[in-house]
Amino acid sequence: MITTVTPVDDEQLAAVAHLLRDFNEEYDEPAPAPEELASLLQRRIADGNATVLLCTDDVGGPVGVAVVRLQASLWSDALEAYLAELYVVPARRGQGFGRELLAAVLEASRAAGADYAFLITSEEDRQAQRAYEAAGFRRTEGEGGPVMWAYERDL
Image 1 (cartoon, rainbow, N blue to C red):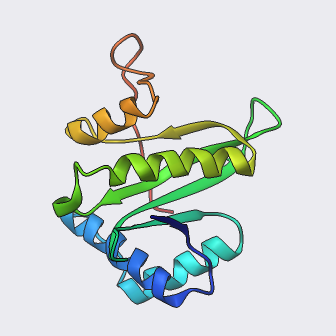
Image 2 (image 1 turned 90 degrees about the vertical axis):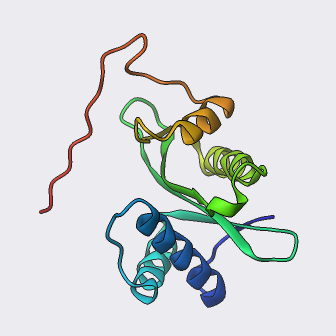
């Protein structure tokens, strides 16, 4: 089941924060403590800068999360949806939870007024690439286009 997390549901915020921390740990990336992350998410949801979807199994256990950031498009009067995070716990992968989350992301984004969705994943994450392509995403670089590089900088 997919639930849209609200800023007043402390239990859901805690579950999402733990999933996102686990995600970063799996890929050896730093992450704030779950309590700090839950507080950040609470503010991002409340101010409309993030939509957070929590996926639970049939007994209510958290198995996945998606975080979508909506922003005004430069190319139309619609919004753009950036899938900032999508994670399914390793033991539950391949069971349809990622597909369910992706479908919910696209539905929520359309409902919010987005006409375009984009995401970034690593070259090595073939499982994620297959899931995104199965959901209708297409590569816009590499095969058939120029290789694109992502850059970051702390400010």
